[in-house]
Figure: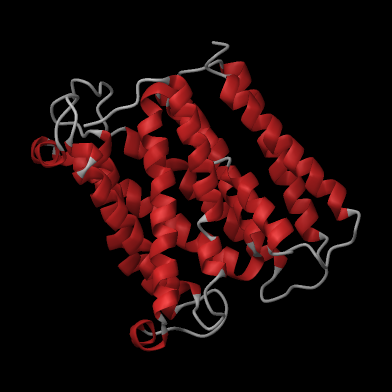
Amino acid sequence: MIIIESYTTAVIMCLVTMLCWGSWANTMKLTRKSWVFQLFYWDYALGVLIFSLALALTMGSTGSAGRSFINDLSQASPRALLSALASGAIFNLSNVFLVAVIDFAGMSIAFPIGIGLALVIGVITGFISNPIGNPWLIFGGLICISVAIIIDGIAYGKIPGGGKGSKAKGILISIFVGIFMGFFYPLLVSSISPEWIHLQHGMLGPYSAIVLFATGLFLSTFLWNYYLMRKPLLGKSVRFINYFRDGSTKDHLLGIVGGLIWCTGFSLMTLAGNQAGTAISYGLGQGATMVAAFWGVFIWKEFKQAPKTTNKLLLSMFFFYLLGLTLLVTAKQNH
């Protein structure tokens, strides 16, 4: 398999992750209004699985390091396999609700609060399991990001009216999203061998772990997404027949592309973790909150009804996110 051996390359990959994770949800925004997020999500989950398999059968099966994808799967212990699968299912529980919040509250509230909280939890647990980097810079960055989350919540509260859903529901579900999403990555990392050139027996290589994660995500969609089809947070229930009857080719392709974009970012972050460390790579990847907030504020105009004084709050949010991400980038270089 091909591995990353440069810290600079790893940081660049994490920055690409940030762009991918902050932008994939735009594909849902581009579908027709009649194409509800529950139907979009089936194609998204399929796109994630397709990309993970393509990556494992190419980069994961060439090169002199580690084991090929098939050989790696065949020797993995049940514990490693289950950990990787479970991480995908746990992530998917939070992600399907994240998409629900995007649907009725917008990207600029779902990402900064939901993913921002996940960033804080994920970096703390990641640093405990793999303490790479200057702890003062890492936790200083987390404080800045936490401040940005609070500011975003205050700004969201200034939008008049409730729209399709209440503000309180959007914030509470975003907090739920953040808590669950913050714990999936350390569980995935626990299934991956700490040494990648000579993989530990019974443990997974990164490419196999990504495939199992994607498999757990796809299979759990039949549980989590089906529940939201029958018991939606807002609006009417949806049936499976609507997926085959109502979707255009464009709608389906946008969902698959959304999954491909997300999994590209996830794969790059996971592969970068060997050099950057779990805490730094996850923290930089979750900087997607800033990218998503940019899309939500400037492209989709989700704060257009808010008073002009809200602009100062939004600028402050971007400032603290940028400062926090900068501290995370420099955390290893100053260790």
